Amino acid sequence: MPTPVPPPLPILAALALLGLAACTQTGAPTAADGPSARAASLDLPASGACAEEIRAFRALLDRDNETGFVGPTVYRDATGDLAGPAATCRAGNDAAARAELRAVKTRFGYPA
Image (cartoon, helix red, strand yellow):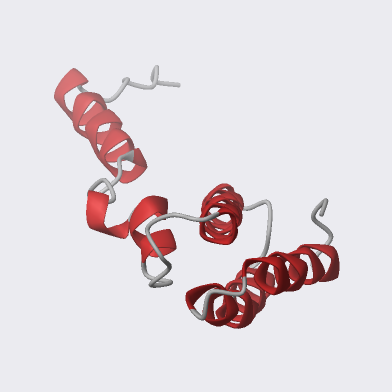
């Protein structure tokens, strides 16, 4: 019985490169797509406790979504529910906006 011949080294090298190519990302997220850009999309006032808290929670949601800690449906619903507190904050009612934000956090299992 003949001894099996191992594949030539160039073929093995090509297969290894193909395997590595499949593991690389095609591109890194741009700064415009990052959490701070999404948090800024809420159009909140530049300062104020409610604006800072809403931005911080939105950034946390963004990180949790990116790491897979929350599913896409929860992320969509939670970020959508931030529209209410953001509108109240823009209207200048800091206390009510912060109360609405606490309700959103509680609804989705985050500490308020």
